[in-house]
Image 1 (cartoon, rainbow, N blue to C red):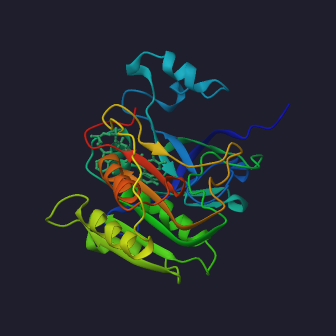
Image 2 (cartoon, rainbow, N blue to C red; image 1 turned 90 degrees about the vertical axis):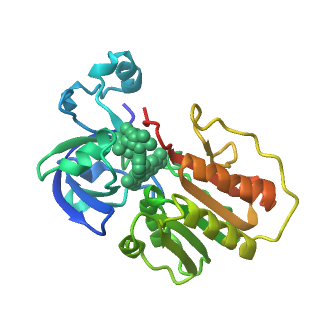
Length: 300
Ligand SMILES: Cc1cc2nc3c(=O)[nH]c(=O)nc-3n(C[C@H](O)[C@H](O)[C@H](O)COP(=O)(O)OP(=O)(O)OC[C@H]3O[C@@H](n4cnc5c(N)ncnc54)[C@H](O)[C@@H]3O)c2cc1C
């Protein structure tokens, strides 16, 4: 029988580290994490959280787990949310996930606020049997790019950090990031080829630093081109997500002046994408955009 390329791992918290005011690192251990796959960059994972009402044991984990999960009455479904693998240490059966501790508004934020050593979750992730293209990675730049723009809010910071650590030293670009507190700016690792436009959320409101810094970066990195129409996505009902790829999963372009990767709150990402593609004229095949969450709307 073929080995599973994605599956659930049952893990327990072995360390909780407050890296900055908003970023809390959870180190998870599990007997079979030697088989947890790490295809790289912004590899996304699903984490199933136990709640006071629904234990982890209620989660269907077989091959067709999603259909079985959907078939459960809503009140009996264990909730899961999407996160990013930060570090994998297969040799010692450990995985780190960095989670934003924000107001308790849903099952993940509730768990993050009260989790303790020994608490268990399930992580759905690639296994080490996974080879080839990972569709859980959304950072798919052309082979030749002059500059890379990595932009987002705090939920995108773990993915941006992983991407920066894995890019070669000669890569160049700009990081435009908005975080809740000034002390969160220290979260990102240094990359010698990147300029950092990282700022704290200010009185001007959510997204104002992010939108201003992306607008400035785009003006510096992308020559003004002919804007292309972008279709409007209803972000309160549909998912805002486009990762340009070939049919085989590779980058949609062989080369580009600028490759932009944008992730975070869907309203902000929608505005940024419109600015880059419709106003600035950046080739849409060189812009990946992902609505990671939406104000006022739970993930599922
Ligand atoms: C591919 C991908 C990768 C992600 N990686 C990470 C990661 O590595 N680390 C990380 O911390 N997050 C990450 N996120 C974001 C995370 O999945 C969401 O923030 C998630 O909705 C939190 O779940 P919740 O149960 O707290 O809230 P939900 O039940 O989903 O939502 C309840 C309410 O909380 C609000 N809400 C959700 N997130 C936030 C927030 N960050 N700040 C303020 N209000 C919020 C919603 O608008 C809603 O009103 C990622 C998302 C995606 C799609």
